[in-house]
Image (cartoon, rainbow, N blue to C red; front, side, top):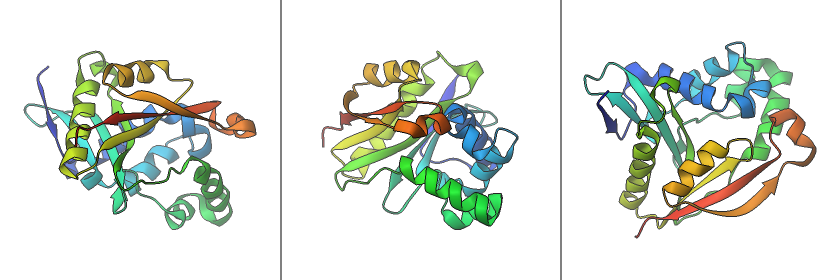
Length: 197
């Protein structure tokens, strides 16, 4: 199937983008946010299409993949503690917010932070992930950033292979310690790619 990359997510595809994005990270945060539809619903409520890119079919009808990024002005999955409490109640939102804060990554002025990438399962292996990554790097260049940074978890070697093929280099490894039992992975590796700016 032919496709095109858009540097936004059309409103008609926002809910589907949230679903695909959540499913890609379900192994990482599904146990925390709920695999019963609550997690995907939460993502759908807080997704910010201005901080995303997508791959869609040439006729614009089918969403094939999505990638997000984060700046000081916002991110693709752009929730706060009030959003979490609205979905999970006061107590449920509070403890989930505290646990999720462990995954929060600091912004750097010269670096664009990736906010995840996901491709529909039926469309994997067709170059869509690579195309989305290249376009994220293009966004970083447009914003004057010298690097793109992302984190990849130890239980997702397929993603790490994709990132390495696209020129990302592994750096610091952060261990979750006892929280590995909540998130379902033990460590995350920071990977960086220069943009040439």
